[in-house]
Length: 430
Image 1: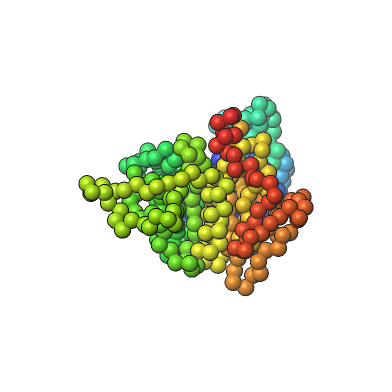
Image 2: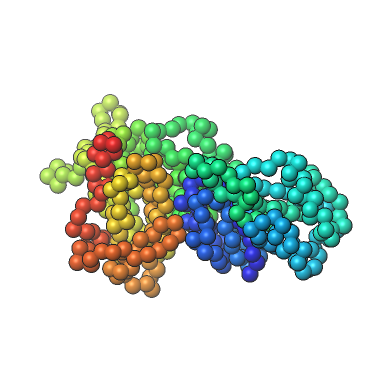
């Protein structure tokens, strides 16, 4: 295994490990790291991978990973870094002895002037490279990362010296250009809830979308998730109750079978308008036509649809219609002061993998990632169901098992109502 330093974009901080883990599964790459090493105040993570080629595979699809260097030396001061680089065995340098090269000093959480960077680069003059310096088209870029942490954004002045430094050859950059390619400003039609391109791409990644995947968005709106999933080669389909955005029959045509590789969605919160669902009235037979006399589409009768009902139906639907190993990725809105991990809906056939918070101060939304159990896996027991998952760390919740109820379909509920059941009221009270 080789050592690398992953440099992430300092955005959507709680989502970085979820995407990294998913990409490692997609590319079938063995990856080793300590989740607690990735700090919210830093973009750097030390990772072990089998090869440089594997690092490039992860970069090729990642949205939150910016770039990677191979780790040759790590230290807490620049002088100590130089000492460690001097002590490197010659086999580190041998592939690059005659290569065209340049040096790059990258600073996070502070700034260095160009003269200061030049001074630092010149202190590496002891290295045995015989190739020419090439600033425009080098064959290798030797990189120094200096991590001062993100203290200024916390109201703390940058320290005089970095907390840690890394050195090694640059591997590659990621494909964050996709964010601009699918920027909402370039879309021909937008709705009030259209998801931005970066988050849509991240969701497609954590859902393990790949060429040939069948992806469903049951609250499709203007199709942001289907656009990004299609980019990665999926066959996509969406449904929506709002006929102003799509047209179709009211009831889904899915057979009760395992079909979807991924379900990716942003369920209606009931904020901009109360969430609704198609009314089912057993006393009134369904209409044989979906058109009015003037040829226009009939709007089906609807009734209020509370958020906790929406999510329970979504979880139950996913447990039936996902293929084994398929993923459900959706947004759960929460009031910050009221949220508890026990509010996340659970099902005996769905393992909770990630719970990534996007905080808006008084309220937040959480990206929930669940995976359907494999055929040879037994239903989750109560202990396995009550696992708190956040920022890649798993721990057991403190909850009396007598408070847990599991219906015949496997849906888990508690004696108390989840906080998001009153999300609309709490949102407007704030």
